[in-house]
Image 1 (cartoon, rainbow, N blue to C red):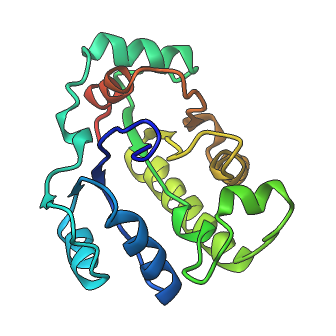
Image 2 (image 1 turned 180 degrees about the horizontal axis):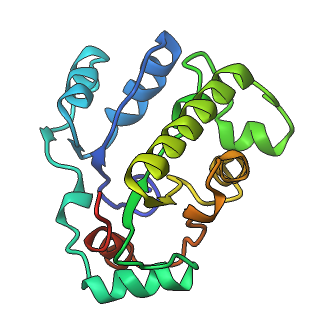
Length: 204
């Protein structure tokens, strides 16, 4: 991009996790070639300094997601109804947003998860930890639905075939005690401000 298109390059609001010597070398090699770096949290800024990727001007900023203004509650309610979630004023509506991100990655991996999955690597890796996480989530859901008479909406972090979030959460919904009170939100086609509008509808 710099050599052929003659365009400046900005690293924008990056979150950096670099834990290996090879990762540090590759990150330093790449980042020191850009024209401007912004990182979205203090840990990322510390990482930038630690790996000596500070040749370009570099700044700490905020995650740009903080700037999103949610649409109206009516838009959020429409998305939930479309997904089959009942909006019953007699029952609290609680969203749980579990992430399986940490189970996909290992600091020593050379092949990124998305590519490794496509070629059939890393099957059943960390299966015991994932099962423990799912069991804990099931217990939590059972307690919430029993104690608070609430409906639960599970919001996967990555509702895409590339990741296994939906598969794991489908298993959770099959194993909870009060199945009629638990709903898995599967769609990934709403605009960010419309997706965020669902938070206007949730009680917790």
